[in-house]
Length: 252
Image 1: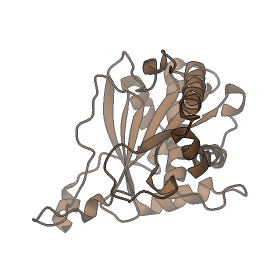
Image 2: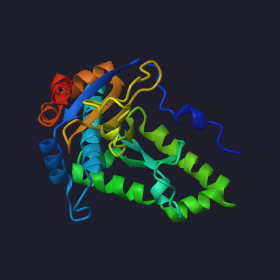
Image 3: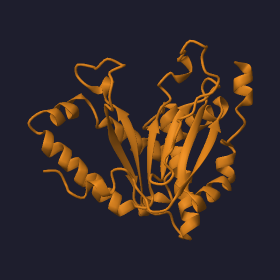
C-alpha cells in the first residue's frame, strides 16, 4: 500500500564511495554560529539548528564547486527527529527502539544563492515543528497509512528534485554519552563508531564533544566534495579538521 519507489531514496544510497571526515566545533565557534543564525523569525536558534544551517550552506557550496555550477542548486536536508517527547502521552526518555521520524527542509534553486544561515534555520525550524503530537496521533490512527504514504510521496518528490544535493543529518548530542560509565570511569572521547562508507553518502552525525558546549560532525561525503569543503576558508574559520584526541584522554 506504500509507494513502491520509497526504498530508492530513504537510505540516501549512492553508487560512489564516500570518505569519512571529522570536524570539531569548539564552544566559542558554536556560540558564534548561534549568533549568525539568529533572526526576527527565530531569535534563539538551538545550537544544532545553527550547526545544521552552517553545514547545509557549506555542503551545498562544496557540491557547487564539484559540479562547476554557476549558481547553487535546489537542495534538501533531512533531520532525524526523536519522537519520545513529541508524543501524547510522552514516552519515557529511555524507551528502547528506533522511535524517530524524518523532517525535511528544502530550498529551491531560485532562492539558494540568497539563503543565509538564518533563513536556513527558519526553514528547518518550520519543518521540525510539523512533527507534533497531533501529527503523530494521525499517523497511528485510521489515517496512518494515508499520512505515511503522503509523507513518502512528498519526500520522494523533493529528493527527485534536489538530488544529488541531499544531506541527511542525525543529532546525537543529547544522548549524554560522556556520562556513560561501564565501571572504569567516564569516557574521555566518544565517536559514532563504524560508518558504512560503501553504501551511505551525504550523511552527517552530530556528536557532543569532550569540551562542554562544543560539537563534532562526522560526515560521509564524496571525495571531491570533501576536498572542496576542506578548502573552504569560511568553513575552516569555525571547524577544526580531525584534531588529536590525546588531550581529551589525558584530561580524563
